[in-house]
Length: 76
Image 1 (tube, rainbow, N blue to C red):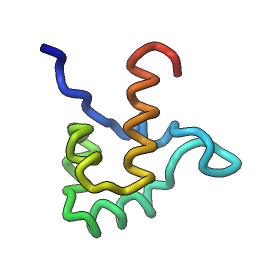
Image 2 (image 1 turned 60 degrees about the vertical axis):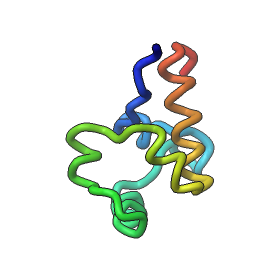
Image 3 (image 1 turned 90 degrees about the vertical axis):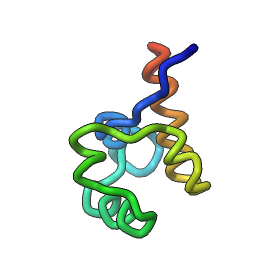
């Protein structure tokens, strides 16, 4: 059985292709988390299971998960 993928702020802040610099901004992501009922402080401390982000159905969340998978596979 494979361990669940935990998305961290490192993944969040390094996701490419969103603008001139890679990553999401902290302020916008914090607001996004609140809008989706997610605990921002817990996410910063512990990360969040990829399945929780996938369940939001949000395109940007799916992009972060895809990036994290790439990083964890050693390709990012």
